[in-house]
Each structure stands twice: as C-alpha cells, then as structure tokens.
Length: 283
Image (cartoon, rainbow, N blue to C red):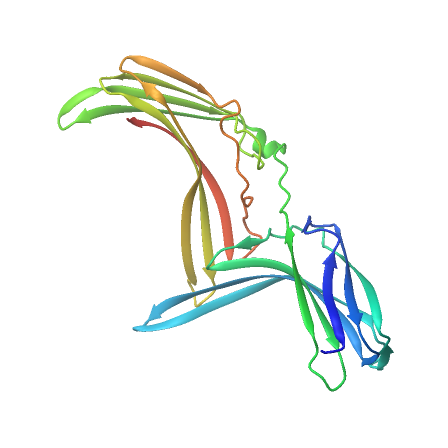
C-alpha cells in the first residue's frame, strides 16, 4: 500500500521455551489517514513433511502435517466496524501464552520442518490485505538429565579374536563405563574405557555419537517412512600396540555439540534419537 511506509513485526526475543509468554509489537508507519477494518494476529506452530515417491511408475508427492499450537487475537476493530487509522507511527502490542506442554523443538530438513511463527493481517476495506510473518525458535522439549532414569550407569564389555584367514592373531578386550545416559548440549560425556590388546595388531579406540532421524507420513496401513543417520561426534584414540593396555577418560574431550534434543512421541512426522558406540578396531 502506498500509504503504509513501514509494516514490521517485532518480538521481544527470538527463542522461547514452552510455558513462556511471547511478547511483541506490530509497527505501522503511515503517511496518510486511511480506513482500517482490523489488525489480526495468529500464533501458529506446525510440522510439515513432504517428499516424492514412485507409485506404479509415476512420480508422486506425498505430504502430511501436524498442528501443535494455534492462537489468535485482534489488535484493532470491534464487531466488524471500520475505523480510521491516523497517519504517523503506531505500535500495537500483542501477547501470547505458550503452552506448558512439551512442544517439539524447531527443526529444519528437506523432508520435514517444524516451524513456529506469528502472522499479522492488516484488513483494509476493498483492498488486498497486507500480511507479514515472523518466525521464532522453540527450544525443547525440556529433558532433565538429572532425572533418575538417566542417572543409572551403563557398563559394556566385549572380547574379539582377531583373525586373518585361518590364522588367529590374538584377543582384544574392551570395557566401557558410561556415568549416565542423558546429556545436554555443551556438556561433556562422562565415559571411561579400557582396551587390552593381546593381539599381534595395532588397534585404536573409536567413539561415535550417531543421530538417527525417522520421518513418517500416514498413508494406508503401514504408512511411508524415511530414515537418515549422521555422525555428530567422533573420537579416535591413540595407537594401542600389541600386548599393551590403553585407558581412556573422556574428561572434557567429548563435548556434546549444539543439535536437536531427543524427540520421541511428540511429533507423528518426526522422531530423533542418539546412539553412542564404543569400539576397538584395526588402525
């Protein structure tokens, strides 16, 4: 519109936790008076999944979505009446209470996105209504890593015989101790491991944290699924010579990088979990 010089949506901050109050303003700077019917604001959070499949030789697009939150408010106008917005700078505050329930975190990938945004519509009589959108980030769901279910230590042991064709080259023993099973981004994984190399080969300790993501679309009885995995954290230890032992204490060497938290049973389109593997293999 020629008489709207500025139309902006401003939020108090860019990132929110479930249960917080979302505060913002709609900014309008106009150069003349004009008729205005309403200023409407919608808060929405939803997941959308979409990819292509081959069905009977035809390439088709399948899609699905899930709504997590939708709330509305009106900043101008009552009972459908039209008023006059005077020229100048205007700021219209709005407020939404985010639900306390576990909202899945914001997530971006090609097959699926989880997005949260505020949409504002300026309803002007006999004209196309200007619209604006402002995206923000949800951090969550909240996982208390000090909860009892994550504090139980995990111990793993393995013994393998190293062979080449029919010749045995000895046994490699591995023992690992994980202090607890829940960690937050930026926290150091508390892991101790020991390799006893009684073989004739040089071996090394390998640690990996792998992210597993499953995308799902409800179609028919079984539905459609896509699965992806990638290594998000990796460590390779020093050489362990034959007939030697190697002890490893993670200390601050295994810091969890910034990544989405475990996401299970909160979104029907997306599941995320992580697996830590500890192994000893040939150099």
